[in-house]
Amino acid sequence: NKIKKLGLDHPPVTLAAKIFCHATEHYRQRQESVPVAHKNKETENKNDDNQVGVVPDQQMLEGHFLWSLCGDADDLEALEIGVVPASTTIQAQQRQSNTTTSGTTTTRYCCTLDPLYQYLKRSLQLTKTEQETLSLSFLHMLASKTARNAFGIRTQSPFKPYYASLLRKYGRDSDAHKSHMQQVAMALSSCSSNNKNTTKLERGMDRLVEEKVAPWITGIFTLTAYMNHSCEPNAMVVNQEFVYAHIDLVAKRDILPGEEILISYIQGVQQQKSTNQRRRELQAKYLFTCGCSKCTSS
Image (tube, rainbow, N blue to C red; front, top):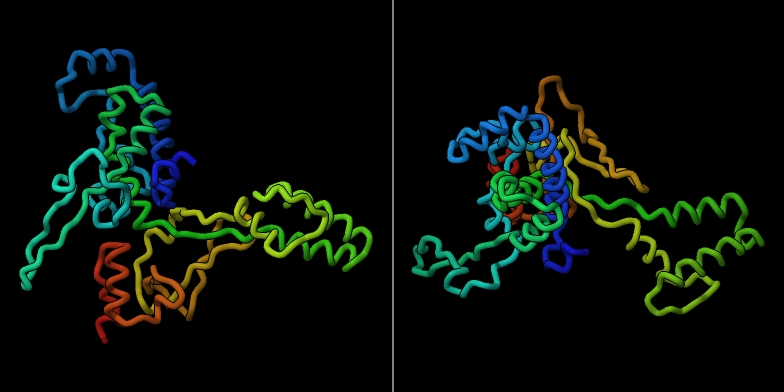
C-alpha cells in the first residue's frame, strides 16, 4: 500500500523492495559475524577503501544467483522505472541525447526510486554506515535486475474450484448447496464497497475474491532467469494454477542433447507481430536487440 501511495506500484519495484529488505538482514548478519578486533580496526580506518567488516556495495550480491543476472543501476532510465524528482526543474530533469540526422533532439527524464528508498531507510532504520552499502544505487540495481529477469504471473482464484467442488459434493440446488452459497454471498457482500448485504450470489462477486487472493505478482525463477530469448523458442513457460506461485518449463518440440533451451520473453499475440515491432518491445523491456533466426531471416 505504501508503494502505491508513492506512485511506484510496479511489480518489479515491489520485488526489488522485498529483496532490499532481505539484503539488509543479510548485511547485518554478516556484520555481526565480524570479530570485535576487526570492527575496532574498521573504526580506526574509516577513510580506508578496504575497510574490514564492511561489505562493499558491488559485493552485496556476490555469490548470490542475482549477481550474475543482467541489470545495472543505470538501466533504470531506459526501463522507465521510477519517478521524476519533483523538487527539480524541468531543465534539471531532462537529459539530452545525441541529435538525430533529422536535426531533432530526443529528451529523456532522470528516473529514481528515491521516495521508496527514503521510506525503506526510515522503516529499516539504516545507519549512515549501512547506507554506504545499502544505497539508493543498490536499490536501483535491484529494480533493474527484477525488471529484466522476472516473470509476471497471476495465480488462479480459488472461488471457481471451490464452487465446482460444492456442486460435485452436494449437487446443484440442494439444500446444502444453497446454504453454502448463502454463506459465500454474505461474505462477499460484506467485502463489497457498496455495503449491500445479500444472501444471493450476484454477477461479478467472484472478482472480489480474485482482487484479494489472485493478484499479479512478479518472481525471479533461478532456472528460467538464465535462459535466452528466441522468437522461435523450443520451450515455453507455463504458470501453475490455483494458489501456487510456481512455473513449469514445457518443451514445444523435441530438444536434442546439448541443444540450448530457448524461451520467448514476449507472450501471446506479441509473438505474431512484425520483426520491427518485436525488436522494439524487447529493446524497451529488456534492453537488447533480438538476433534470433526468425528476426535475422526476415
